[in-house]
Image 1 (cartoon, rainbow, N blue to C red):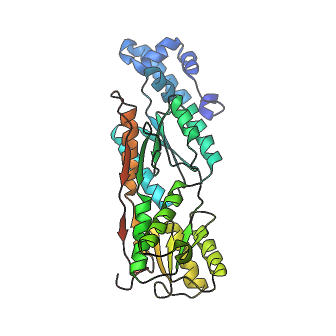
Image 2: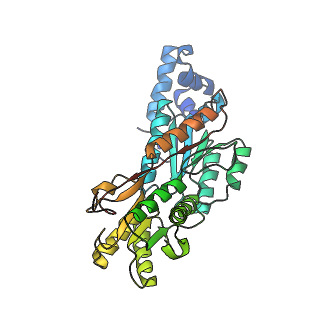
Length: 347
């Protein structure tokens, strides 16, 4: 007959195993860690008890005793966004090379939710945390680092030379996007952007403004910005409806803060308002996620090296927590504009 522990009324402990096998705690520990020290008959009794009780050793406690933590935490803005899905895959692939595991969470762009996950990761004793910050205030992350938890900023440049970061030059990327629209002859450009609490949104606005200024245009006149409620397709839909309500006529071009926003915007432009893309409104997104080229009208987008971002961030964390205590690095990748049919009839 199986024990209560097997049926799930409580999780079996090492003490339960010792009682079941009629041995000491030390003997059970030896069977788990140094089996060659235990007589075969006694070892088999302990193994039988482990099987009967469905005992699972506490790997985290063992790692803490040995000083060999192998779990890394990551907090991304939105795991449902294909951009962050690819970033997470890059993290996971790099960690797997060193037999480390990933504990993944989504802040949903909420600083309070991010703070809860940070506390949880700290309590679990992770090796370190990769974070895409939900706000521009990084003080809480610096405090964690001061308590000994290694932090690497992901998709965000670090203002502190002692904190590693991996990012893409979003100012340059947005400037490419808007310069492309200007080259297509557009002078009434709308920008669906996210909140200024998110650094990427701030940088992408700066890039759009820079491209307009470089072309000799007044950004206040040539660019109409709408801040969307969320950086997803629903936010894009809502942003376009607000945009069209605010303007006397639709803009001739639309730059979106990311591809999910662009997808929602294109859906409303085409199916709700009957506008042709790109003849009536050209659209450019950002990230170049996997679906961008598969849309009915393939989406022009600013490509980011998504998996590479995750892989390099994980590598920096492992090096910082390794035996060589590697110094912090700030890695910045350059983006690439991929032109498709949503912004140019010649694509």
